Image 1 (cartoon, one colour):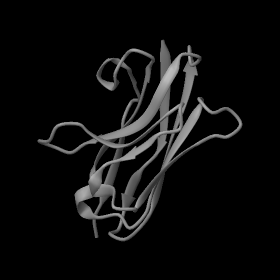
Image 2: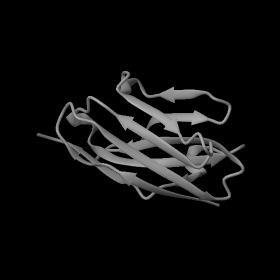
Image 3: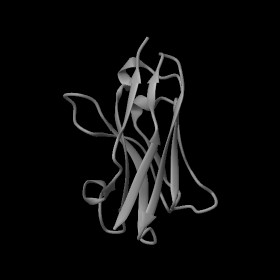
Length: 121
């Protein structure tokens, strides 16, 4: 079992930046992938960015070079970040950190508590 604790988020004006953090603890030795999802009111949860321990990184099309996912180099599996730049009102959502193990998938993995990101003037 992996526990995920998120921090960051909040209210920002359009064009601004925010950074989200997610720290994993517990049984992190079998982690295969870590990433960020978001869910806006009335919408399904969607992938924002994800990387696997093999080095593959995926971004949603709507990111368009504005967001960067990264991880703590001191311990590759323990902390990930999402740097969000040039934020738009449509980026407003609750953002969730996710991790899952080999042979599993995000749906059946571990989730953070969620962080509200609101982009508004």
